[in-house]
Amino acid sequence: MLVAVVDALLQHKDLSIELSNWDGQWYVQTTEHWYFHHVFTLPGQYSTLGFLPLFPLLMWLVAHVTQLSVIASGVTLSIICGAVATVLVIELAKEWWGEAAARRALLFWCFFPGTIVFSMVYTEGLTIALVAGCLLLLERKRWVWAGLLAGLATAVAPTALAIVPVCVVAALLEFRSRGWRWRDRQALRSLWAPILSPVGVAGFGIFLWFWCGTPLASFHAQHGAWSEKTTPFAMVDVFGSLMHQIFIHGVGDHGPGGVDLNGVLALLGTAFLVYGARRLWQVRDTVPLTAWVWTVGVAVLALTSAKTPPNPRILICAFPVVLVVGAQFTGREQKRLLALDVGCLLVMSWFTFVGIWLRP
Image (tube, rainbow, N blue to C red):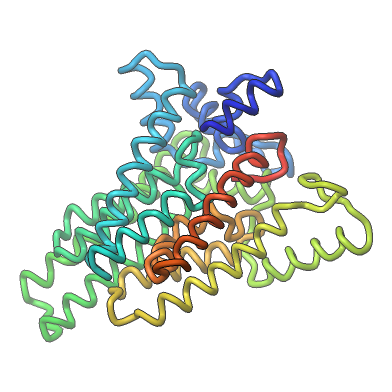
């Protein structure tokens, strides 16, 4: 936030523009104008249909209750949800690795560069809070509440769709623990979690069907206007594009000399994801399968996305890999890690808020 304020003063820009940069502007427009009735599918024909509804709805509610501006309401919501998300993920870390390790994970998490979006009009704070709450409730076998949180999460961001298989796996584990007795009433209650988990995205699809004629309007908008697609060669394409920019001809829009810094960040994020997954595997006996399914789901979505690679904003959604890296370093190594963490946060905050070099 301080970086945003300093930049606004130096560049003589409106602070609200800094805090709602990139996708934040679309959440603001969705809150103010709601969804288009027509689906635009040509590249560059952007519209509010590309974004899910729960976060804009909450922004509208906060704005009307508090009389804050829409942008201030979005930032307030992000800060509160980011705080709740932090409490919940550290509660998970405490259950997995104990109090001391959870405190180390807490420090690393709070200064991780991806938490920039907890000070912007972005959905990750809400998404992580709902998902972490769902994981905690699944471990406590509170099936209905877990399913409700999962259902809300699927109405926030596409990444949250990874919570649906998590709920399916949790139910299967409950049936297995009860000897696969399909008439066991306690086991049957676990089915509430997977049944309720897709309610948010399904409800949005039904709304879009009536609103603009197709339940897949949001998908078509992202696929057409933003050229978003899923491909197993996404990171290969990122690497090839980056090499082309560096060694042949700089054509990137978001970096010095035509080299797109987002491509560099995607490769660094991929390396961190692999490293964190390796660390998580080393302590696999302490991490429940549901957390693994969530982490793998987010990783697969990120690594196969043409436009949303594993940058720091996506990495905090795969929070077990971030937590385990922070938890496993102690003493002098921990201090060095935190120094690197804070440095990356400050540098990336600057490049995120100044101009358009780094996408959150």
